[in-house]
Length: 435
Image (cartoon, rainbow, N blue to C red):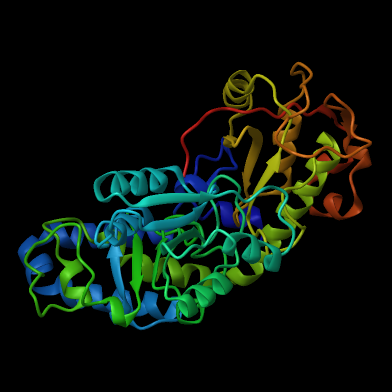
């Protein structure tokens, strides 16, 4: 099934060029129908559904998810989103003054705030290790990061796939080394489920939280928290309710936190089955190839060096690309108002970036539409936050679609590739809140 056929299965507005799946995801209509069916069942007889059926239904959904994630159902609990999962773990830690939480400067802003809040209360220290761009090899990343470990390091908190830079960090090696050193690991996998294969037992993190509403395409409000068995007893829920007791299991403590709609959790198996039925391994590879070709072309256009090697070891369907600095607010407004293009622009560590999401429904023409939609903007000045090729110009350049590489042209699924469109690319920075 090609991208256009998949697009027909999603509820997205067909008039929108939707290149921001990464922020909040998008749900296929068959999965959303399942979600609404569960909601109707709940409302038909709320006491029967929540009072007598919910535990068994949640057990079944959790078992389905556990098999997908490579773990056991008793190691998983449902949460509303990865931020809730991260807060659940972080706020239960018994940190002392001077204890260090080691992380990177690529983390999601909401979790930076979580740790700053906790450190303010406990006297612990949140250490943000700088990971400069471009990254090179996983081995170099691990050695650089590990150089920041001290005798005071108690926790390592790290994204599996980062939000601002979309980099896939080598968490397996970090978790293995941390376990040898007796350091607790908490992995923020917000962007991982559905975008890359996961085997939580092989990863070896002490805690791992991930969203199902993003790349797995489940309804909003569907996520999970994983804990290794040795941490079950000490784990504490954010909300203490009827499930809690001194003898309660990990699942019991977290499952019941007051009345809530559990339909999103119960729809996760439908999301998994949807992707299996549509050969999502092949879909992911196609998406990665389009993201890879778009990333290469943007490097040619801007003269700015890519932030990572051109490899699925570092990125998959989410690709952050350096762009020159110019009036981002104006361009973003025009892209939306005139071209109906939805895409985030990132201001990170003084550099300016465009974060492209390529999901199964994304066509190469839509990537082309983004570039064509940038025509006519004022010339941009070079960005200061990234390295420039020695031969790169100091302004954005005109380019012709006739000059596209053959690999990229093959990805264009319509006549646009042969139209000889000439476009001025004027990428920008827009300070925006995104996930």
